Image 1 (cartoon, rainbow, N blue to C red):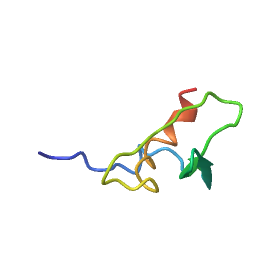
Image 2: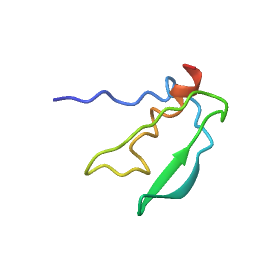
Image 3: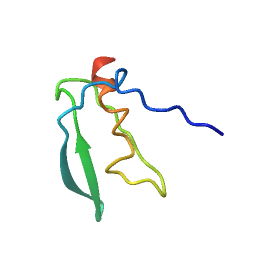
Image 4: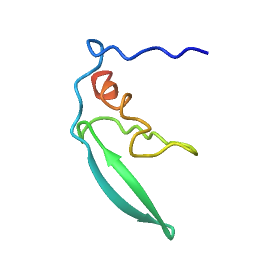
Length: 67
């Protein structure tokens, strides 16, 4: 199986991402936020064995542009 090679000319501009830890129901969750606060909420969840720090770095910059 071949994987597409990254093309820097097609890559969107990187977003400013803020990171935080959130307590919920006795769990501590790592949260990365990007895009306009007034925009619609989109939640991206990663699965094992991916790392939350890098799982969505290529998708996050595209989402605010799509509204």
